[in-house]
Length: 99
Image (cartoon, rainbow, N blue to C red):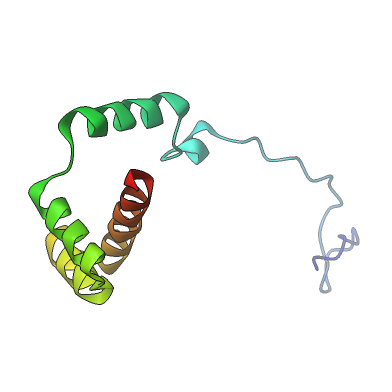
């Protein structure tokens, strides 16, 4: 909604007329993005070491159908609601893959 500059020294769109430059994508913008290699390594580690005891307990709660209790449990272990939700989703996917 930004209108073009008029080239006049006052008014709503005051200022020298310039051409906008395209912003270059910085490397920092890709921080936290999951790479193929990282995904592979995590999968391999999960395969070798299995699940932590708290994850196994959470999976049991999910199998019994206590989703809300599972979320409360994971939230207490992981610290935040969002982390708890993500972990619960991860564990439900793991249960689905096992079947």
